[in-house]
Image (cartoon, rainbow, N blue to C red; front, side, top):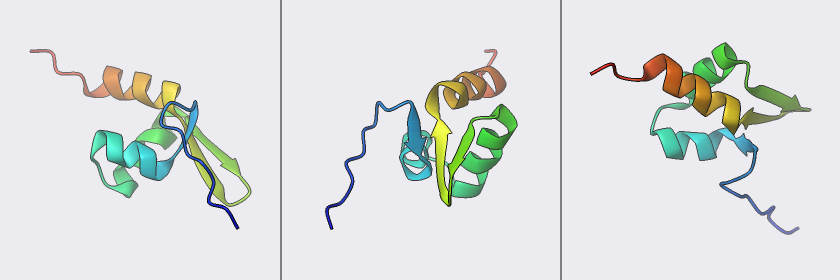
Length: 65
């Protein structure tokens, strides 16, 4: 069976692709995604709405300095 093609610019991304971009552990990424309301489940597959996730991430963790 062929391996699916993953795009880093997709709106709904895998947890692993988000982990690579923000350099955080899976638990922390899932916690932030849940707080942001960015988790989409399709059966057992989990996808994260990258627009919602990164908007929330920037607003919540932005440095004021």
